[in-house]
Length: 154
Image (cartoon, rainbow, N blue to C red; front, side, top):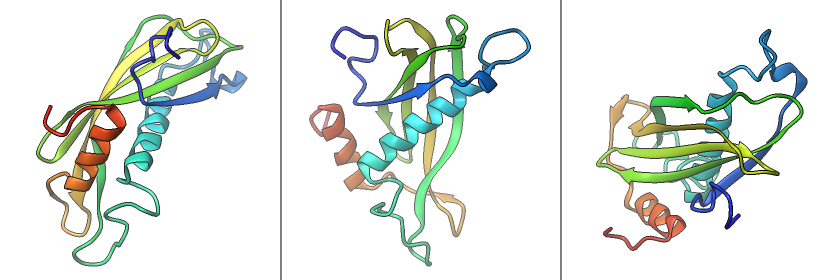
């Protein structure tokens, strides 16, 4: 992917456009971008151990149960997606705060690299039992830095 708009995205997921994804205007309904963002974001969080069976907070008992919750998402639509198409959707982390992780997303054509949508999202680490924000676990921070190819301080 070195020549694509997703070359700096460590997690990339591929999707075919389905006929049923289109709306009455003859292009893919814009809400699909959020589903694609979500799938790439979840794939990223699985890779760093924030969700999935090996997640740091997989134990849902008292004292465990730490995981992500979506706080914000947005999209900038660059051009409409039409059937047929194969897409690649990237996720990368641009910032890790005290209790939040900021993602950047891009949707592009798998064959030609044409950018269709850019966007982002913020997830907050939450203790589900009490609904309180908690700091992003150090192991998750380290896994993000390693996946992103950055040193643990910058």
